[in-house]
Length: 499
Ligand code: NAD
Image 1 (cartoon, helix red, strand yellow):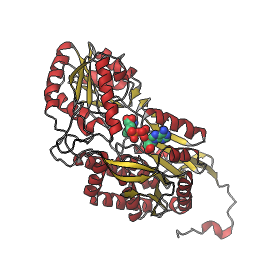
Image 2 (image 1 turned 90 degrees about the horizontal axis):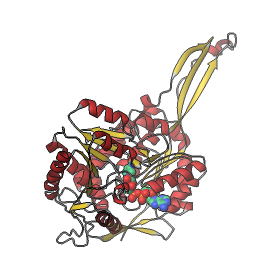
Image 3 (image 1 turned 30 degrees about the vertical axis):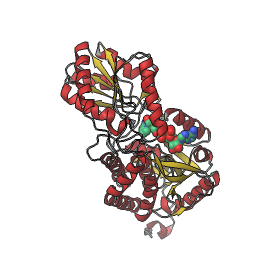
Image 4 (image 1 turned 90 degrees about the vertical axis):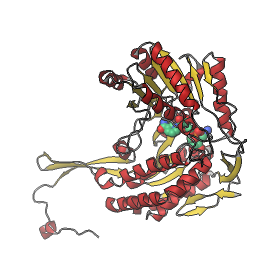
């Protein structure tokens, strides 16, 4: 059986813990490989390698660091098909979605190519008599990223590309469920010209996460995953003096107004709710319809649209979505469907028990649609993370907006309307981090910033964009004065040359 190794100091390293995680083929339900789960000492070896690489890398001029990013981007583009197929084989999402996953990562690498400009400080001439003030953004040192299973290319790139471009050296601890693409990213970063130790990949579970959060030489940690773990990571990491950003779960609401383009809204939401089997933190699993007529029309059309969806294996180019990631996750999603039934919501379409001929043991779930979901229901309050759409009926926009604002999660939300004023007010007032106006999945482009509110994010600095550069650097401000008469003879006129 294939083993997935660590990548430390520029080469693959066979783990010694004797502990492994199973990597499934979600299409067949079979174990296809094993990933090594690191010990604290193995994590320590990766930190040593990153620490040794830091001095050289952090003093490499920003233009040269940018050139490594340009080459990394070129390599990702050249390998996008191979990466997407590898990603689908472990995650289960269809290959077109996996290409999107890699492409979103490439977008952030492209953003990081602008680091010479992005990392520039500020300068004030003459802040006082003969006094100038300038600031510089310096890298933090050895930093780490802990990533979830659902975007194994994009999320490691969100963190590592920006952090490394800023001059930090990096430890990536990817999800143990689909670790092969993150390992390839580390290999490609080396091939792109980053010295050994600049990007290390250590596989593992809670043991390696705790080792990261308590290691004295790791200065900052970025985490993306479920909320309870995000909160734990934030608490433990900050209590050990680290800078931590920890993104958590989500339950994004789409508000369907009576004046929306209903045909377009349904088309958008069917993709946003069921695409990638609902395993996206920016999926739209809740539709809030405003007014009875709107609700009835939406449900009728959505039912028709959901019936046309094809669930297939991840290499089926006609499939809208593939299996979920694991048997345990399938069981969890199906238990939430049962919870919705028990709580009294109307299950109009039941995706449980979905099987595919020839792939009877695959982790497939058909599309499910609930109507008349109520805010007090537990199945509404919690994240399901599967191909399940819940329709909540509201009477007014105010009532609908309050649902999104009051929910424990605040990652994203969307409004579908043709009324610019209503949309503008909604976007300004809703208590959520990312808002779409007639855009179902409002993931910001790489040069803006990604992050939710409430239990969707702990810490106050977002991913990528200028906020990412701020997270991965610390600012130093210099106030300087050169009093007259201090010049030492001709030395004052010697202009140092760059080596
Ligand atoms: P997860 O929380 O199970 O795992 C995330 C990471 O934490 C993994 O690397 C895992 O190894 C580690 N981990 C798991 N259990 C741990 C424990 N007890 N102690 C320490 N570390 C532990 O999340 P997942 O199932 O891989 O990913 C799905 C979740 O991620 C969903 O909740 C989804 O909404 C969320 N997500 C959020 C965003 C965002 O930006 N807000 C983006 C993508 C995914």
